[in-house]
Picture 1 (cartoon, rainbow, N blue to C red):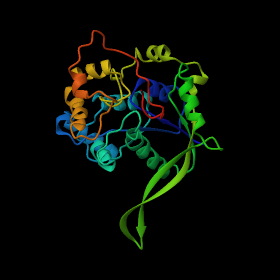
Picture 2: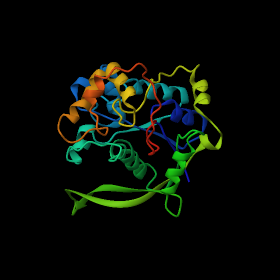
Picture 3: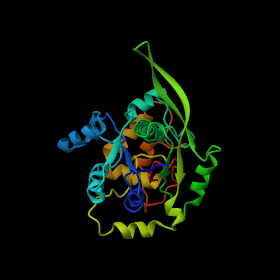
Length: 282
């Protein structure tokens, strides 16, 4: 069974890519259509478009992630497969505009898992692979949650959608199929690697990492950290606040992002609980 490492853009998954041999590396890019979040370096944006074979206006993650991925390719001397699915705006449309939240965690599925799954389906001819998951040795409970969701063959099952073709003509219909596709493995837990080890590894390497990876307005982040993001990434944070203004829910329970942006915190960095998908770096 071949091995895949999914790279989120953070130091942990990059550490796995640098220290554990994989048969393929893959990165899923979150895109937005919002012109206020436009990626400023248009020459580099065109390079991104060639990698994902899609239009790239900008991302709702820190723009540094684009530099991270190109830097990492140079450091590793290996190709990273870039993929991207629907824009975040289109993902919201598929859900009737209702916002994802801690109880409706569909954003990672559509923005990260789905494009990686479809890449895997084509690249590995639908043959199951082992996939490195970036849980550190202090995150055993997250690994346990993932393991409990596996089937009898210790594989993750994904309900995928494929376009139907009838008599050679595309009908625009979807076909849903449950497919067992990856066997998660946790090399950092097995080898006792923690955050300090990862920070020490990267401190003398010429790779640009964002202070925080994943979407600027990720609802897994506590309010104090989101407040900081509203200051450091105002245009992208405003995108998340604007979605709440459409009356289709809030990202966090009982508190709006506009309200968070007006809060006054005396401290600003807290650990987020984290997503258990294995595809985000939170």
